[in-house]
Length: 319
Picture 1 (tube, one colour):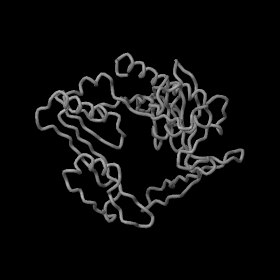
Picture 2 (picture 1 turned 30 degrees about the vertical axis):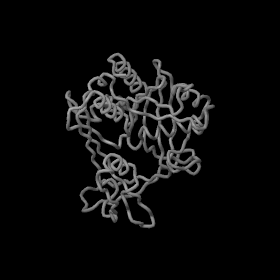
Picture 3 (picture 1 turned 45 degrees about the vertical axis):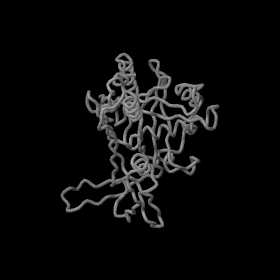
Picture 4 (picture 1 turned 60 degrees about the vertical axis):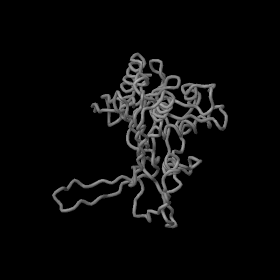
């Protein structure tokens, strides 16, 4: 039965670790998918090297050229996942949860639950992505890197990275920066041996030491496991209290502009005379209503709306 659900469209572009690149992402995707069956497109999404050992893997299913874009859906499977169901007897004091594995197929083949789904379109090195549940662009990034090494003739060290550039129209607005606020979770090393959990040595602690370590005594301290992972946050504010000369101003603006490509786990706010710019304001994201059948987006409907939004961003000067 058809219905409509809201999907969030997100704009990404590709950075290559070897520049200039001899390929575009679109060319790599086309080459890696040529003459493949589904089993050829299975890639581990966990840290396992072989698909036979993997407990969490992904694959590209439907793919097609459409309106000048390379379009595909991408799925993940948590192997041997068990779902819980309840008998609909809500007049009881408590409900009993029954674990249910995927039912066997009519032909006797083993079934698996789809754990996450993603749809995306690609043109040259730009993508529009819509994700659902566990899948993120980092899963797609790992998948693409693995599949192109498996099926394309590229150097071993060749890698891509998916980034979220802000609107080009906002570049001119981030000038004369007054303050930069950074916020990130601090993570300690959690080991099975129950060794003391320390916050020193991770990249956020090192960032804090880089900025203020020479002026402030940041003695190592141990959380003693009384702080759970991600329950402690680090905030840094970079502020110019005095009038800056032009050279300092340009340098500070450059730092602010670089932050717009920071990892998503780091939050930031850039304070300027024209307003405060947060990650949310700088991200190219838009909700769209998409036709679904049996809780699955209709390919042509979602691809068509992604293509139209991409063309709008292009015409509007955002990309």
